[in-house]
Length: 288
Length: 326
Image (cartoon, rainbow over all chains, first blue to last red):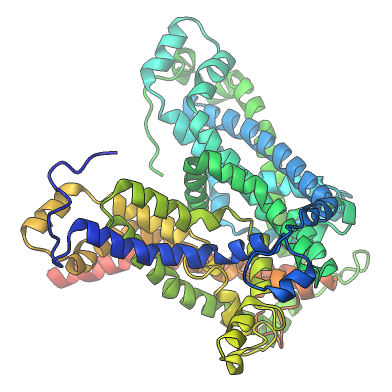
């Protein structure tokens, strides 16, 4: 973006290299690192078009004809898992956004008895690692007869992401300029009006971060889903892929195709919103 | 964390400060109503299970209707449970791997990346380097489990191909290599066992945020590139490494998903088990909830002690160094 105005490509660095030579050497090293990191997925991509015979005959290189039907076979098997994960991700995101923005707004803009107590009692949960509750939460879900329903995933995922969201939303709303609210109050806007017409549009970036954190979290979660979902029709991506892998132990073409299809939603998210994606990962990192 | 003071709240709420507490509570009812769903969810699905976990750990509840109060019997059994402690040892290996290899590779790569002068090349390489982050964790795990496959896997096929067949191995099946193989998932940059790319992102952002005037001043003083890493970058990355340390410490009590994905029973020979894996196996799958709850409570206590002692470290060091200057 900013052109290096003072340093022309001819200027020599301390090593006696020109900046161009410098870029070529460092660039090659980093390209090698990037290649190593991506190689497993490239191998899967190439392999997903092969039959078992083609894989044996030519392990490393692409072979022709490409067997696109591998993708059809795989999709047939993982379609249900993908749709379940989509449903869980959508409901969880909506619930978190609604609860998180309303609570964040109340904590950021109002003073009332118990405000600090309630806020601290939400934030304190950031320090409680999720695994602590694994056993009692399982018992609770069982006594509510939610085992083997998608609600056994949606409710804990929502609650687990809520603390961070309330915290992020409160900070984002506190950061909105005071004069914005003063002007709205002078115009006679009510609380809900301020929330809907002023606050929500101004915190879109934070909402983007929260949605992406939630979706990647839901897509990646495995441990809890393994415990509460036994019904094959209710499996989500994590547990579903494990079943799928065990089914197709040596039929690598469709197996690889299935892995790529299951990755597609997150890859698309990454392609269109990599800024929010990275911000979301970092926000997730601060979620102790 | 410091509460930002906002002076102008809604005028009527500010004026309400003169009323007594009860009147203020009554006047604020719409606010409580707005918070109710969030607070209720958190009370029922976060606070109540935490309390119930501690209570449950005092019972022997192999079957839900035949619960017997056993006091601290579960905790006594846990102390003698070799597998649980084996899991802790494995978790400590994860931790040590994470704070050495798991930080060194991202640091070197990030330093190299910011040394590139062409913004377009830098952008392209950065995108390719972090692209694997976009793959779901389960896909990551299963793809790597294929790489490790003893018969058809990439590693053994490669070793056989270049005439090093003697090094070919049943990577996940041999107790000597299983734990190490799990740690290496995602090599080189996006190591799933140590933050799945988060160390790289945090270090890179930290390096990019170093003020330019500091670097200019150092350049005028003839500071070499290597010297810059140790005298400027590392000290200024303190916040990032603090956060990463905190996460690694918490990971000590949380690790387990990777083991469950790749080495189903914490095997072979419990070589890859972690406290969480053992809690799932012996506490939930076997139906002995009281025992599982006791493990959960111990993990909670351990993580609390770790994070509290970590947070008090700077104060202790601060006191030590100030004592020295006096």
